[in-house]
Each structure stands twice: as structure tokens, then as C-alpha cells.
Length: 256
Image (tube, rainbow, N blue to C red; front, side):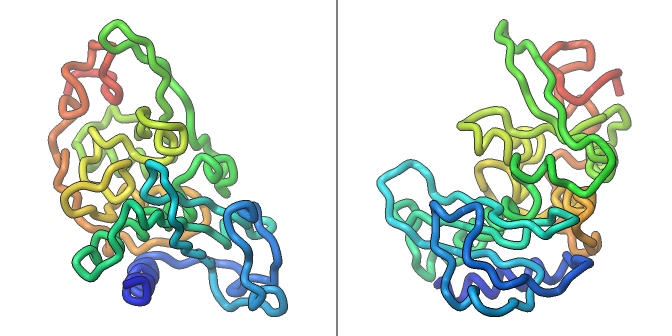
């Protein structure tokens, strides 16, 4: 199943993303992820012709997570990630042909954490514009702090998707443990987008993910390859809240 899934994921990425700059990764023996995996000796002695390497480990742990991922090494100058790690916990995922599409979706999702959407990456984006901020909200008498992505292409994508010109940020998930809360789009806003915290239905790599990749300054994307996200499309500002004068509303500034 792994031999089938990995080429499928690589083909998906090649279909909509390209990078500029060096087309090889210099020989390396260590990364920032050394406590999670050992670099195979084959990479010690020669450059690898690739834009990025993602190592996939299948591990067996008695824990609650299905998978986790991390960027591990970066290109000098641009700080673009060139080495990533994905760990799959086989106690939580049956590696069978019946689960092939789910496995491909999980690998795609986790790989995107190593490529663009991770708290470890936001400060490294090759851009001169603000990337992320935090706002405090009061919901049902409780105060909570949420993180928002501010990059221009992503914000414009949200405005066009919902039909809401007052959007000024795209919210990240604020529930769950820290890695989940800061590494995913808010599920109640983006439904079955590939980069929400819990994949449901048929996950799609939408214009939201492609826009963030472009905003990072590391990638060129083919917007025509974005998959259509029906969730919330053309629903206006009120889809994102009860009314724009209510504290709990996240996007709206004015009635629409």
C-alpha cells in the first residue's frame, strides 16, 4: 500500500506546484528531526536531485495520534523547507487496499504540514507582509485566543469564496492540542478542505491551500488544478457568524 500511495501523493504535488532556485539538495547526515528518525546513509555522500524530500516512517505506538509531520531542514537564503518527516502510527490506521484512498489523503495532508502549513514555517515565509496574528474573543462568557493568517492571496481567496469583502484574515483551528490548533484551517469555516484538522467526506486541495503556498513566497502554483470546495461557497459574511455586531463573529466587520 505504501508503494502505491507515495507515488500518488508525489504526482498530486507535481500537478499543481513548482519551485524556483536550486533543483538539488546537498548531501546531509542530520536534520532538525534527528530525535524522530535517522537519515539513511545513502544521503550522506551525494546531492539528491529533488526540490524536497519527505521521509515517511510507519511506527507502532500506543498513543492517540494517527500521524504527525514536521519540516526538518531548510534551504539557505529562502528558508524554504527541503526535508520533511511524516510519521504514521499503524495502530491507528489499517494499511490495506480498502484504506488506500484514506492513506493517500493522510499522506497528502501531513506532507502539506512539512511544505507550508505549520507554526514552525510561518515565521520563515519569504515575504515582507504580515503572516499571522492573534485575536481575543469572548464566546458564551469565555475568553479565547485564536490565530489568524493574514497573507494577501489567502485573504482574497476567502473574500471571493464566501462573497464577503469584509474578510481580513483566515482563521486557524483553535481547538485541540497546540500542534493541531496552530496547523490547520478552522474546520467550521472550511469543512472538507484538505488542511482542516479532521478529514471528513472527500477532502479537497482547494484554492485556500494553493493561495497560502503562493503567499509563502516559496512556490508557484497552478490555480487551475485547485479542487472545488463547495462548503461555504457564495454564502456571504453571515455564513461565518450570526451577525457582524456579535462578539463571537470572526470574519465580519459589517453586515453583508
